[in-house]
Image 1: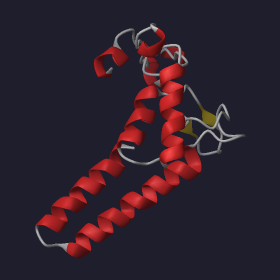
Image 2: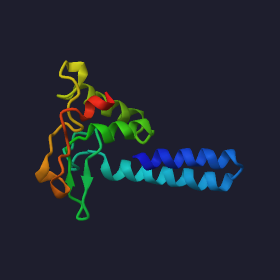
Image 3: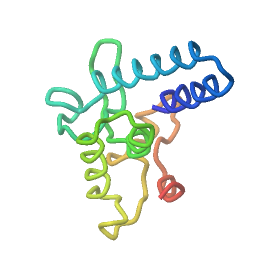
Length: 137
């Protein structure tokens, strides 16, 4: 999701310095990435948890998915304008009503709704921590 924001910001700079064709190419690439994210990573029926309210964590080469409902990645996607208004509202509703939501009094604690630890990550890295979401809440 971050690359979409970066590409759009770089396009603004290219436009500012008078490189209209460079700006157009970067904006087109950003649109293509955003379209791919929406087409391939949205948790529609049959994809991830299939709840139609967030982007899945991972799409594998064999088209299987892993879905921990990553709050940070979903919020970054919303911040960079990847989802349309309806999808953005669905993501925000999911985050606001999740078990880690400050709105429920639980306070943000994890970067994802479903905890993942050393067995779920590369080289035993812990994917979530007790304070990760607190840093961006």
